[in-house]
Amino acid sequence: MEDIRAYIESGILELYVLGDVSPDERLQVEEMAQKHPAVKAELDEIERSLESYALENAVEPSENLRSRVMGSILTNFGDDNNFPEKSHSVNHKVVELTARKETNFYKYAFAASLALLIASTIALVSVYSRLQQSNNQLEAIQVQNQHFSNRVNLMDKELGIFRDPSFKLLKLQGTAKTPASVVTVAFSAVRKKVMIDMGNVKLPENDKDHQYQLWALVGGKPVDLGVFDAKNDSTGMKEMKSIALADAFAVTLEPKGGSINPTMDQMVVLGKF
Image 1: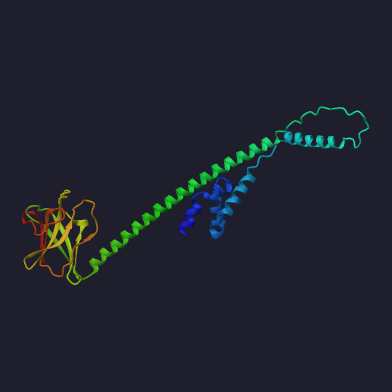
Image 2 (image 1 turned 90 degrees about the vertical axis):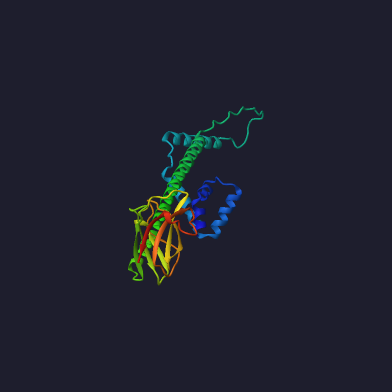
């Protein structure tokens, strides 16, 4: 259905009504109109619109021009009736016929039709342009609504963490290296999930060659839970690697991508249950 709507909005139907299409395009439009009622209905609506526009903008010839045309017709008609039925003259005279003066009526009619065609084309282009603008605005609104919907779903998911009694919140405090640093971790042993509250992370922003790495201490041994960046615009809850048991959590600054073992002199926060 979207392909049919895109075909209708392409402008080919307006060009078909105006006669500004190739034979192949004309055949294609006629086939599409036969196969798809929506295309046929749009084609009929365009033809009606053009016909209404032509009637509303028709140029009435002046009374002077009307009189001249009618006078010319009556004169010619009278001349035809005055021809003699039989010739009584034996000697046929050669009479030179004067060329009938050409009236400008058809020139005026053609000029008016051409002007109407140009005006109609300009009007259609303007309508098509406004239609494209409306479509672009509609797409922008749809993207914005989708973004809003995703944000609402994310917030609902985050609220679900705080409503879930299996999750425990642990605030990791800064070490001597960065005493002002704070990282809040939500941990559920039942669900084997670890989340970092990125909206409340207080860490020096890392450069492009380094990342922060979260560790779980299990029986005194560090377990890698993944890396993250401390950006000022980071928000929401970031899910880390799964783990079912942890005695404490810590964060170190490591080379980009993380390390197999933590660099102890680069530990920035630590927290125990």
